[in-house]
Image (cartoon, rainbow, N blue to C red; front, side, top):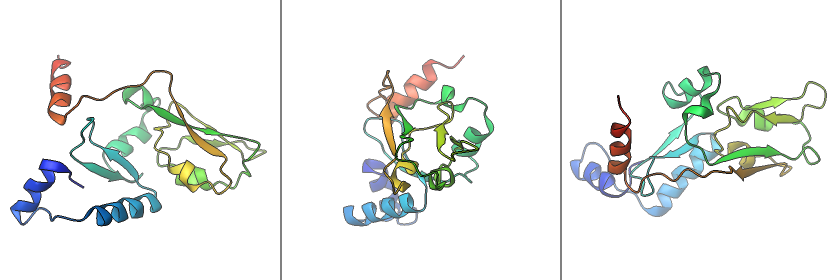
Length: 160
């Protein structure tokens, strides 16, 4: 879903997109959330797109699932935390997690969150009927550049 100037350009092309209302955009995002997709805005304070990834995605999440310590390669500001006193071990969060970060205990079935894998997307939190999950902020927050153009400048400045 494109936003702002990118959306206007795509809609004006007449072939690559169309304008939608705020309500329709929110409905689409809710549907994606309900389907278990990871909502990922472009990496800027003023994002120009929101991508709706699923765990089958050949791109970001597919690569994420193949890496042994994927979070060390991405900037994330939160992680899921399980309250074992509230958790019933139902497994909904494990099935909902697109990056295999929920590891249930063999005996209690209460999951531990693998923080080397957890993106902090909140899909597990939204799916937990027992409210046994919450998102916690990391000690150090990563603030994205103001615009996508500035993000590209940062990326290019780090190229060898």
